[in-house]
Image 1 (tube, rainbow, N blue to C red):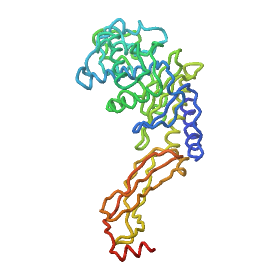
Image 2: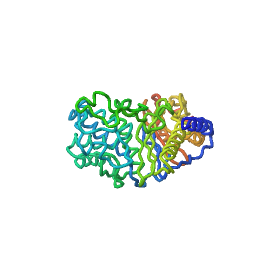
Image 3: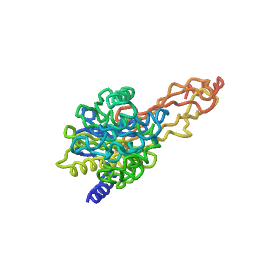
Image 4: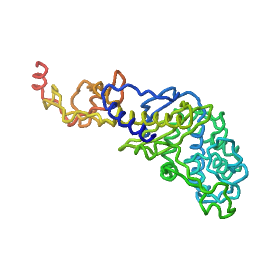
Length: 391
């Protein structure tokens, strides 16, 4: 049923949003932002600076901080991590998302990061924090150091799992963090975010204790778009009563990567809230890919202008190249390319600056460049200069 609804939604969205007169999408979430990963360009925002508890999206910073340990050699991804009583799933609050680790089991650090990313295990968050920093409190201090280093001024963490309503961030700050997370940790994306399910424990995890309350448990990736919307490659969902349903997601289409964060989504039940945040994400990603395009403005080529008093009648112009821009398809006709030429003073050498150009959208300059002389032009003789002046 969920697959059918999302599929129908995407087909409808693609057809509707190919139209030139595209309105901004309507979404369920209280706060949201959609950005282009390469440039940081904001394609859509709604209350993006409202502070909201991130809930289990917190685990993305936990994973990022742990991967910093692995990437700089302070920790081994395959190291065995002891599971303390505090991390044992049986000691976690009711209704917790769990990896179902138990004291005495053998679990590697990378397995714990999978347990954080896929079934969103709060127990895994405790085990990772204790192993890498000695305590959850020490690890949270490292998470906050990371946030401060990344300029996340409205973001603050109080635990490594996201259970606390005191954790806070904004959609804008978290989306900017996701850009860094993806850039720094791309080699772990397939392992941590793309699997559609996660099973724990396996036989090797029971080698020490031989015990498991429930035996192997297979849980689905909480990201409903994985495997259903081909372009989506992560990242993290979240829910607590104080925040509603949250979602950080990324998708790639061609050369373009988009990142979105929605926060404060409604839901009358877990399934209802999960579906609504997935629909919000599908709507925003479709909007970003179909309503916005990567466009390379064309500059004039082989343009010549008349000149007076020179040994030649005309001068070739060289326009510096334009760069790609992201623009709504509906705005393409409103782009203006405006050249500004200086007064031509002879003699001119090849490459002399003779003007600049602007790319303007509704009075706002999007881009600019220079115009130079394509060739050398000497002064004409006295008769030529007099004749041109008379003309």
